[in-house]
Image (cartoon, rainbow, N blue to C red; front, side, top):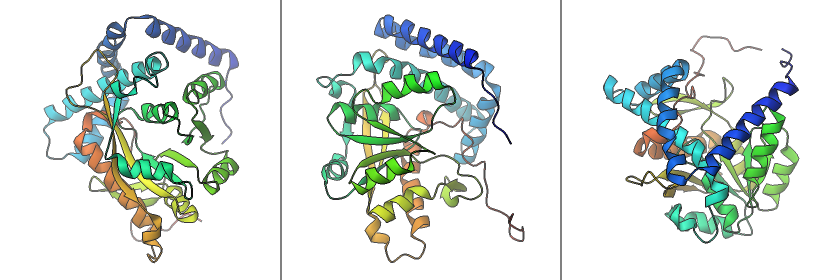
Length: 315
C-alpha cells in the first residue's frame, strides 16, 4: 500500500503549534508549568476514549486481581504521568544542568551501568521501556560526558523530526534512525559504542514471543541478535519518578539498573535469542509492576499473538 501523501503546509502548521506550546510552557514559572499536567490529563482522559479503553484492557490483562475502580485509577494515573512527562521534556533544556543533575535523578544499582559504560573493549546495549522519563536518562548521560547512541523512530512530520532531533542531541547523544541507519548502528557497535533502545513494542507476528505479565508478547529479535553478534553487555534500565516526589519540580527520578546480561553466558544455548529476550522482558516487567502508573499502557502491547496450532503460516 502506498504511503499516504503528506501536506507540507499542514505539517508546518502542526510544527508551529508545537513550538508555540513549547514557548508557553518554558515561559511559565516551573510550578505553574508543571501544574498544567493535571488539567491536561483530565481533558485527555475524557476525550481520548480509544486509548483510554486500550489502557484499561491492558491493565486488566496485566493485573487481573484488581477491581474496576483500581484499574480506572491506574488509567487516570497513566494520563497524569504522561502529560507531566511531556511538560518535563519541554523544560529539560532550561532546567537540567551538569551542576544540578542530582536534583533531578540518581543512579540506583549503578555499578553494572557504570562498568558497561566505561568498558572500552565491549559495546553496551541500554535496554529500557516506555516507563517513567526515558528521555531524561539519555539527556543526563550526554550531560555527564558519556557519548551514547539511541535508536529512535523518525517522525513523519519532518519539521517536528528536526526539532526533536535537536533536543535529543543537545547534550551529545547521537540518534540512530530505527529503520534506515543500519550502517551507523553497525559501526557504533563495532567500535564499542553504547546504544540505548526502547524494547517494549509489539513486533508483529514475526517477532519472538515471550512471557510478559503472564501473556505471550511479540518482541523484536534484533536486540538479542545485536547483543550476541557484537558481544554487547545489556543493562536493563528504568527511569522512574520517585514515590513522594514533590509536584513542583522535575523528578527526582531513580535511574534503576534492574538487570545486567552478558550474552557470552548464552553461547551454548540453542535458543539464545528467545532466552535473552525473555530475561530482559522479565526485568522490564518487574520495573513496571513496581510503577504501573508510569508505564505507557495506551500502546497495544499484546496486539500480536502466536498462531494457533494447526494454522498455516503465510508464505
